[in-house]
Image (cartoon, rainbow, N blue to C red; front, side, top):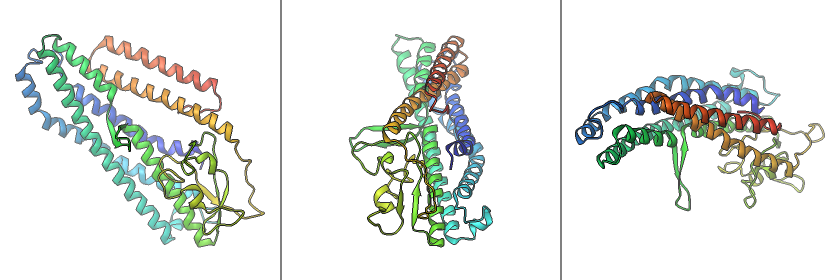
Length: 358
C-alpha cells in the first residue's frame, strides 16, 4: 500500500486527536482566572483542589465526545487497508473478503485490540491532564506564597511549562530505567500504524495460505529503519527480498527468521510500514533493490524532519494555551515561533526533494 494512501486514511484520526489534545490543554488553562484577587492564597488553593471533580468530568466529556467518531474511523481504516492490500486473486469486495473465516477473525481481533489500545491511550491522556492541572496549581501556589512572584507571573509560568510538556498518551520505562513519555498524537500514530500494518500482513498471510502460496515478497521503501547491530530491527537489511512462509532453502530464507515477524522490532512490528505480497518464481517482476547507503541517508534526513515536525506541534500547543490565557504578548511570541519553525520545515523539505511534507 502506498504511503500517501495510508496517510490520507490516517489523517481523520490524527485530526481528531489533535483536537482532543488542544481541548484538554485549554481545559486546564481556563481553570485559572488571572484576575482572581485571592489567587495564590491557601484559601484559593483549597478551592481549586475542590474543583478537581468537575475538572475530571469535563475532561471525560471531551474524550467521550470523540469516542464514537474515533471508533468509526478506526473500523473504516482497517477495512480499507484489508481490501487494498489483499491479493489480486481475491475479489476486491469486503463481503467476499469476510467470507474467509481467517480474514474475519483477523479483522475482528485487530479491531478489538486497536480499540483496547485507544482506551488505554485515552485513560493515560486523562491521567496526564489531571497531573498537568495539579502541577500547574501547586507551582502557582508555591511561587506566589514565596512572595517572589505575583499570581499572574506564577500562573503564566506554570501554564507555559504545561504547554511545553503537553499531554502524554503513553509512558514507558526502558531497560536502563529511563522513563520515556510519548505525546498523545505520536502515540496514536504509532499504535494505529502498527495495528493497521498487522491487518495488512495477516490478511495477506491468510489469503496466501488458502491459495497455497509459499513465496512472498517484502516491500521496500526509502528511509527504512536502520539498526547497526540488531538484524531484526534493521529493516533496511531485510526489505525488498523474497522469503518462504514455511521452511527455508539455499535460495530463500524463512520469513519469520529473517524479518522477525511477530517481534515488535521486526516486520509488522511497532511503526513498521512494510507489507508482503505473493511471489511466483519466473513470473513476478520485482523492482530494483534499493541502495542501502542511499536508504540510510534518507533515514537520517527523515529523523531530522520528524524533529522539525515535533517542534511545530509544540509551538501549536503553546499558542493554543496562550490564546486560552488571553495573553496577547505570549500569543504574538508563540505565533512568531510557529511561523519560524514552519518556515524551517518548509525550507528543509524543499532542499531535500526526496522528502514529503507531513
